[in-house]
Image (cartoon, rainbow, N blue to C red; front, side, top):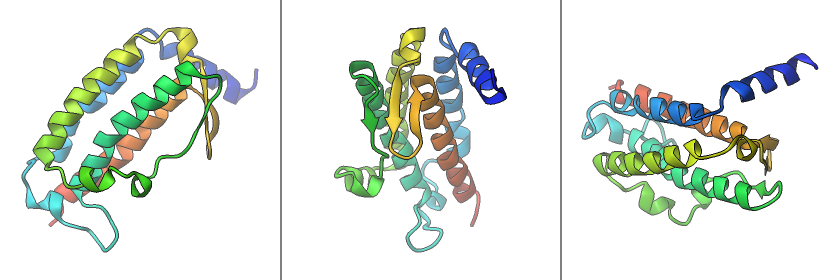
Length: 167
């Protein structure tokens, strides 16, 4: 077994039996301290033209819960489905999402995260091994889709962290 294959197999074996649910819950637990004051004007400040403010980053990662849940359903229902990359700019609901106030986004995210954690905790090992094909990243087992979700969310949390703390 090559090094990359071994590492992938080891990671997959470790992330079973509810560990994904724990990771999802743990990362969500950091949102409040990262966001800080949910009515802070800093979350509304646009860092530069064409860039999202903190509220828009938060709206995006809240919206991504629905995208992730839909991807899980498709991967479970079909054999190796191709799942296109999500682009907020192409989402017909994005204009509405980006206007939602931060406190409401946090409430919505909490409900969606709870549902996502419950869904993921119920996945069997065989379901975590099911493949979905990302148009840019290629074939990935469900476990890697969950990792991708968390990494993507982390990127946006980092942006929120910076925006919430700069004048």
